[in-house]
Length: 247
Ligand code: MG
Image 1 (cartoon, rainbow, N blue to C red):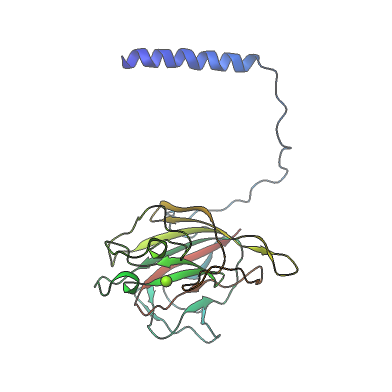
Image 2 (tube, protein in one colour; image 1 turned 180 degrees about the horizontal axis):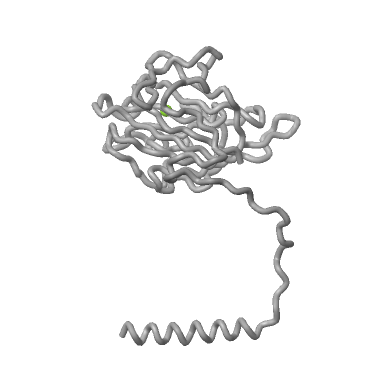
């Protein structure tokens, strides 16, 4: 039976290619690009920074990070990771970014404390405004657009791909920055594609505006490039291996 199927498939494939061969040559749909794509040397693994990435945290120091009001970042650095220092406030990158590809690894505390939004809460804020939620969402119920990988209060993740508390997890985020006209009106909304531990959880999701907790999202005009920020939500969440590529 398998042999018969292969034989039929081969016949069909042959018929298809011979009919293609007889068709008149079609004009190419677009002019051939003149510039070769730049060469980028990938990392040793897909989690390692490629040659054109900016390494935002290499496990040793917070020199590329500041507090919300511009001072040196005060989070704890040890053993190759940084950890939220509860009460120290959020931190943000000194450099600013627009469209970008971001890789970031995080772990919620291995000792589980609290429930719902109080368990391993932090957040990755693109442009200091648009939050991809960080939360211990392993057997932890909360509102769906507030669990790990949610675009906070707007889009739940497509699936829950969470690892257990204490284990390292990855986000790979492709971010399209919003565009504003000269009057400050949004003319092109932000969009995000997110992979959580390699699993697609946001598929070019349109961001409706600022990811508020307590009110409807709205856009407020800002620059074409802004800092990347990480949230202090009072829980000692860890981060490591953070790199970004400008797009
Ligand atoms: Mg959060």
